[in-house]
Length: 283
Image (cartoon, rainbow, N blue to C red; front, side):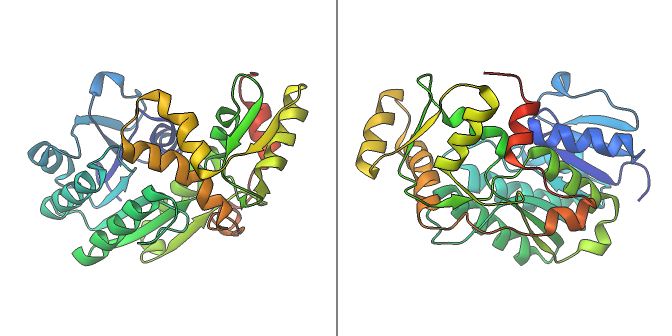
């Protein structure tokens, strides 16, 4: 790829920022398309342009001349799917030829996790455009597991005895950088990005207990209890559904299963949950 033919979105966020830094370390020229340019990282070989998924004209300007686009999913919202579709259409209009999209493990129209349905429909819209594509279907971020525990040291949710293959954001970023460095080799590929093992929330709690040196437990809620315990946040119904269905998807076994995609793409083993937690600031 030549100058400015790779566009990276989400560079002001955790995942997009990681990907942008890895590309800079590899001396890959890139264009960072962000909503707030003043918040974008200043990286060698990177130029910053303003753009937003729901601003068609700005998106087309920011994407014109790009060959490959790395698309991090938009912030969770009631209209996220329409934002995705509009941005994909802008990419087509700007002449983008290959779209690498950060999707979700088990994306399907009837997925238990409500937001995984949005990812499925985004994937279908991308396929329908005729663009070359690569989908990175991430499992639940291992980096978010510590946030599942409340101040009382208890993880609560209707996950039953189900399991999830929590994946480190650093592993996702390394995999994405490998794809973006040689995109043509990954055209049409769908990669399930997972950690090295599937864990129940009881086992995840045991990991937090060991690393933090204090007790953390898992309390399985009913679905009714989960909605009731989260209703005090004043979140809209779609957000409550997303929160609760994260757990019901685990209970249904839809986040279980380990893939070899991270080792194949990065050339090293996927990072275990204990190592992710240790690398984070202590709670």
